[in-house]
Amino acid sequence: MLHPLRRALRRAMAHTLDRARRKAGKLREEQAACAAAHTLLECGEILKANLGALRRGMTQASLPDLYHPGQERTIELDPRLLPLENARRIFKKHRKLVDGEAKVAEQLALCQAEESALASLAERYAAWEEAAAPDLAPPPDFTADAAKLRIHVPGLEADPSSTEGEETPARAP
Image 1: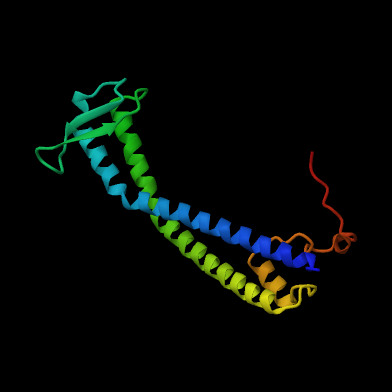
Image 2: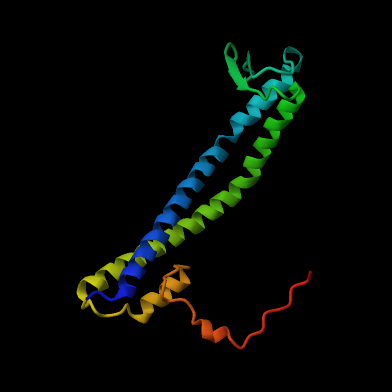
């Protein structure tokens, strides 16, 4: 009979690895958006240069492109805002993307390292599981590595009796 912790550990590792991959995908999308921040800056400059041709209530504007002479650029606008407020909104988005670019790159690097560590642990565990007898519990090194990588495995939580002697701090009203 298969030891119950083996299935729980395998599922928890797969779930955590899947979550890390999804997070990395979202961070890559954010990184791509940050890379396209220069187009927002261009749109903001085009709006600023053509404020006289715009009015509140417009949902989009086709304006002469300052960066590609002879062409027009269509820019989406918020109809509730004044033309200058629309330009400020675009500049604010640009600034936010530029400021967040380094942070997104840092988070992506951390996420990719975590994903790599999780994949390595999952491969090691699969190799162990293939060679081990079905009734054996996972070795302590796998459970310790899983805990380091913040993999929540039902059945391996801390013993609730270990916190019995601790007092909970009183909460202020």
